[in-house]
Length: 498
Ligand SMILES: [Zn+2]
Image (cartoon, rainbow, N blue to C red; front, side, top):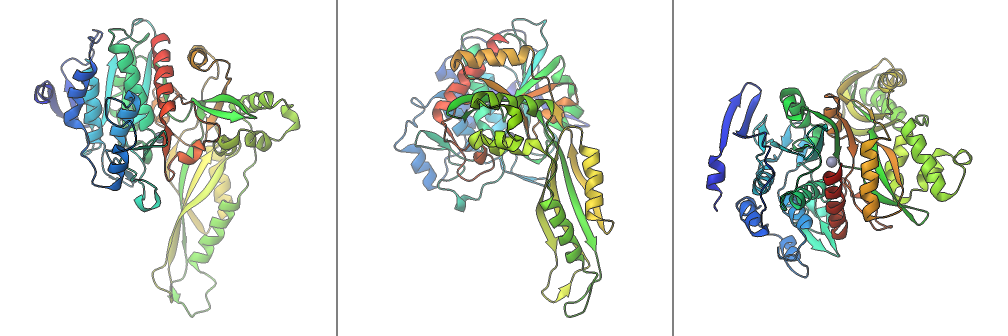
């Protein structure tokens, strides 16, 4: 089969809110037909990314089980997705997700599904599909990933970040953990269910969003605002940055992300006298700005435990065998090993200066100076933190909110958490599951506007010494191949049973 007939089934419409491409049967109730690997390969083949003329390709193709017949399905899909350079630079600059979305569309079409594509801006493509469940009286579950990645500076990497290199039992590349791994696990798990003619337990709304790395303005937020009907009937969601294993005191446990800190991106601006660099000037915009930046950067926000972090630390203390009241929250966070990189910032608000801009000539005092501050607030603290920041920097500094997004704290117990626990337990018996509040933000923030409770559950069984937090937006981002296979099985198990 060529790709042409598939394209003919697709209708292109333009609407006031942007264009979307739609199939004539978006609410299919028929389970997918049984489908072979060979026919699935034929479906995605025309959409595969072009080979890269770099050393990375050589590394990718030698000394590893890289031929498609040998490479496990999840790793193969994740590798294909990494080869689409979907870098998102922020401030509306991005390579776009279109080709990656078309690849995913072809894969899902191969499973007998009929995805919808949305493009609010040229090449900024999101894709959704509803998979009918066995029990249609249950609320639907949103299973989502994002297709964009943060940029990668190739000269800093050991391999080409967009080659999808496989070496040392790992898949290397930008997006290997954030989050083309989970994108691939979702697709492979769906295939495991649908290719045998089976169905998930409840309706799934599967979404692959654009623009997550710039706050989801052209992805999840745009869909929630312009096409809320896509998510009709859903009450919960699962996605990234949770479900991975950590090692505490030599014992394996899993972190389930049940909440997210709030996001407050601020611009500080100071104004002063523009003058020759040789003058005696007290009213210097850079000096005033620098003082404010130091105050925020050095600010030690107080530790405050939420219901989520209290339960997490109690769980950590139990594993270590200590009384949680006899150890400080920071000590218990450090006991989580490499995961402390994720846990420590969830104990307090943080305010990190990230960009400074001022001046244009060595002997000219500029009239203004600007800094960007990335503030992450504990649930319920947005307004009070903003007021404290204004007081800290003083009246001379103008504070503008560039972007803000809500904090989330979802139930840590209930049917979904029970199902996650049971699914993990069937594949890694006895490992405890601990809730945690994530310091970053995900597309779950946008879905929360529709009353959907979003969790982070992208299951990965990781080696004890693997510094997983360092992989996110890091150099030499990589994921163990075994972890991808594990994730595919656990996720498939959850979708079949919940
Ligand atoms: Zn991500």
